[in-house]
Image 1 (spheres, rainbow, N blue to C red):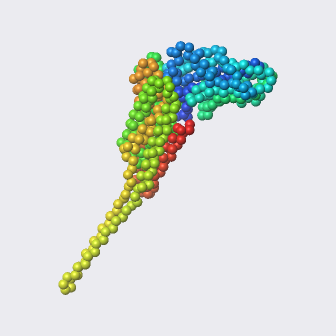
Image 2: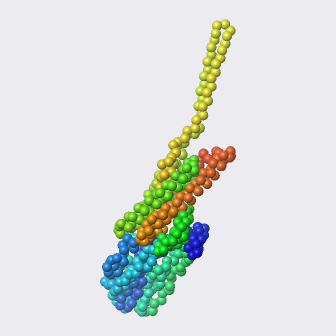
Length: 466
């Protein structure tokens, strides 16, 4: 009954506002930083917490490494700079510890805690600068807090307490613009601390976020019963269907493409099948690559795939627009024949011949190759949730189950795209059958091509600069 309740909740989630939040604010690829700065009269202390999400933890496997905490905290130490009045001060490591909290799909996460200290004479007013350069190229949440112990912080630019409970609970209302604080400059002087807490309040998670977590948790169940297996597959179909309908993914433009190119039901099925195949193969290949290499940054690979998808959609849109604009107008041909014959005497004969020909010239439209290209573009960027589910199932020795859920996710995406495409094709045909709408359909291919082109450019720009 509990599993059934989770499934019903997930079904209701399809009506909710989508969320990108899961266990981590920017996804399961992230490496997140928190630095708590405490200023004393004779030193600056830092508690640096590093939170590795599921996929970096799987790649690096810190639990299997001897003295991982000490060696990795040395790297954190090397990435932290502390200066007092412009003079760099030596930072030392006081202690190092590591935990492995459970994450999604039965995978572990990593919570590394490094306690650092730097000597400083703060018997008079001073300026302290702290900079974090540890793993600068990885996407993640970056925050700093600052307090004083017998030292007053003058108008500090960071709060006194953590908005994320030191990377334990990320506030949903900040996920659209996550914290990215990697350096802070503090003006201090001896005296009582007079700072205010400006930490952000935490928000609630949406139903879709809950459903996504339920989906990934199914893959991590130690006891896989037939009921849980069936519910997990059904949930993967629902989440795949909702993923295809989310704004910003550009997948629903495929439906407009079908309507604009005189698409048929078979065309819609071809696109749906291509999306499913591409998405499934993409998740399998990326999962294999991530498992094989700890140096591969998953978010960078997804960005490259996002750019490739956008470029592909842009190219198809440009070709489709060019084809639509080159369509020839109605051509009318006339042939005339005129003959006269005169016979001897009063005989007179005339012969007339007229021929009329009407021809409509059409430029070549994008055919089956364009359909397959749009399907590839729709499935090229895999869902991180589907990837985590696959990796979690592999970790539990149930690779087949992970592949089944990934296929279900792709089928859900394909079902949405196919259904929307068929609806638009039917609507187009019905309107085209009405006399007063016929002339308006002459511009539909160009309008659709322009839409595909604009969406492709938008997807490319977002992948490049996000």
